[in-house]
Length: 629
Image (cartoon, rainbow, N blue to C red; front, side, top):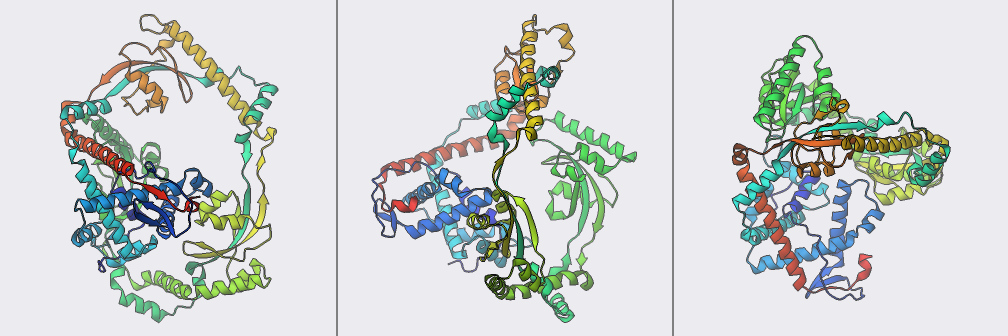
């Protein structure tokens, strides 16, 4: 088939296959009678069978992908959400869609499949060309063979073609799109008076009875999860590498045989300060952010620390590190950012740079020119790599020996000493956190948590790059914190409840005293004006509050809303000051994108209706209900 197409991408490429179709496969489960059986056939879709082995294979794949996206997903969660029924529903839908595609003569040629696979950047090497070794490694890392991956891709592409075929009837009127654009882009500016609950808490002293009642009514909040601690003996190529001897000649031979691996691209180490802006930000908002950065640059010129200013002012995730971005090549950054960064000398700060993320100030701290790493620079990493390869060859025998000694009665500490490896202690943690940290499966965690303190598991647990042997060191059963331990938080929660109640009463009083849209004079000095906000519900200092945003967008300018609104830290009185509608220029810039998005949404709706119609006409008969239990 496509034997030439093989190598890397990571779990994301598997997800792409299913995102291609966009539709929600998990729809109604169709009709048909249920009967018991056990023939190796799970169900019939009309007269076409779904085999148990195919279902189990699909179930394992889907569960693995779910666990990658939701690391804490438990067996109980999967049962609650009826994952098996959802997988069967997807398989039924896929079968019906493939049948319909064949009837319509829709298929995917080898050339189309090859072009799609080769176009995925996850399968490219550093030269940004398709690499068969990258491809095969990535696909196999997801538990699939290249042939299976290509077949799944072919099916997904065929279903995408079918969706486009069905969606041709989707029509969008420009007036409708413009109305939706106006609705989504409309902004409000509001005046507000915030009455924080903390202003009213000082006179509140919770009684002992109130504290005891709160404790009793909220007992679940004070539960402590059961935890267990372990000593782990990690057996992996990296852990065993120190036991391997690698001579200098082997290191030199590897260096000489792989010159391309030691080519170093031009790179810089830099920091940045980012002021985020949406792509459709107005010219006024963009200019305001640029001016703010120019002010910061002026402060830098006077000697202030770039890292300190980044911590205080940058919107990016790197702000916690003082804007530190580490080393990067030109290709790693968007073009405007890379062009500015690589034009700077170490120590220099750029003028404001606009990218799709907002405005940046960039400071380059170090620079590396393109070249080749010397043998002395590369030797330690080569030695480690060769040692790990040797360790990987003996890993199975080492694991067998370790298990044999445990079965013979040695302690895990004695096994570790014999191997010359340290035990790694894991402090007492809940099982879900243990699963997340080590990346072990739920069944293995259940086995370890069932051990008695001092007992070692004689069965190894697989981790990403090897195995671990574990010995439980402690158990702490589920418990409830004593009242005295949580008294402080309880009293603060009661003060907050009382403070919120008093803040609302005050807000109602102030609103009743308003005359002609004006609050009482003693409150007017506390009125603030918000930045423009959209219907999403983020109202500046008042925080995320969809209810408040909805009420404000339904109100007329100039009048205070008739009720105070609870916000995170109190109650607020709000009136609309100004409505800002998108301009003709903004609509012209967004028109094509908006029309395409609405058309795509309509196509998805049509396709889902199409799938539902196929399901309604099909007879789905389950013959082995036990598989779904």
